[in-house]
Every structure is written in C-alpha cells, then in structure tokens.
Length: 179
Image 1 (tube, helix red, strand yellow):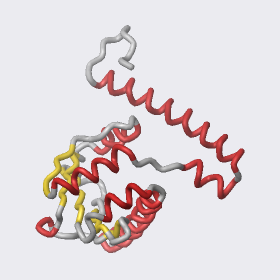
Image 2: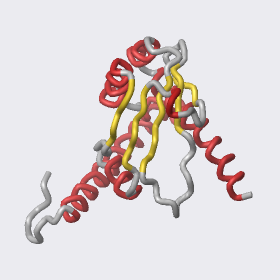
Image 3: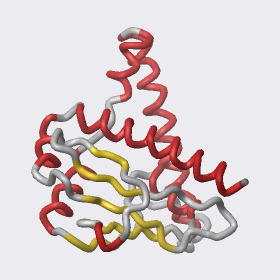
C-alpha cells in the first residue's frame, strides 16, 4: 500500500515539475526553438546512489514535443533514452546545498551530443523570472518587494552554504571562508 501511495505521489509531483519546466521554457522563445530541433528525443535523468532509507525518487524521463516543450514520460528504459544524465545523489543533503549555492552537482552525460549541448545551454542560460509571475498575483510594487526579499534570502543562504562547504573541506578556523 505504501508503495502505491508513493508511486501516486511521485506521479503528481512529476506532473507539476513538468508544468513548471514548461512554464520556464515557454517564457524564452530561444529555449523552445533549441529544444524543438530535438522533437521526439528522450532525456532521462538518473539519480545514482540515492540512499535506500529515503523514499524512492519518481522516474524522471522527458520527451521533447514539437513545440519545444517537455512531456513527462515516466520510466523510459535506458535503451530508449537519447540523452542519459546521471547525477551523483549519494548525498542528498550535499546535492541540495549545491543547488542552493547555484552550483552543479557531479554528473555524467551520455548520448546525443547535439541534444546534450542544447540541454547544457538551457542550464546555463534559462532562469525562472519569479517576480514577473508574482506581478500577476499581487501587483508590480509588491512583487518587486518580494523579489528583493527573495534575493536577500538567497544571498544569505548562498553565503551560509559556502561557509559550510569551506568548513567541510577543512577550512582552518580563524581564516575567513573563501568568497
């Protein structure tokens, strides 16, 4: 029963993640143009080393649509994936800290080089404009204030993560953390 609930929740989460990804992609015509060149191609993310004590992650495979958006296609077999991205997820806490610091985790990419190049471009250049989306909900003034607050919180989190990473790497006490 627990496995069935976990599968159902995972599917619901992945459908929402797909909607969010497509919202961000659709906001930049260059992004959808780049992806549209790969219509029908499948991108599969695999999280290697995920701790067995944690709930299993849902299948993360996406097929590129003619509109240059993504369609979640569940558990696509490895053999059918045109691009395989393996993420070292043996330490989920460290993975989350890297994401908060704006750094990429260790990954291994195999498959179609042109698709990998365009996906890499998306990671490097595509950003979610949260303030723009907030304006529709709360108006421009409040959205910009919330945006500034979010930027301040993000900067504080990034600084905290960098300090923790410096300490974890064996930074000496008495020395300021590297910028």
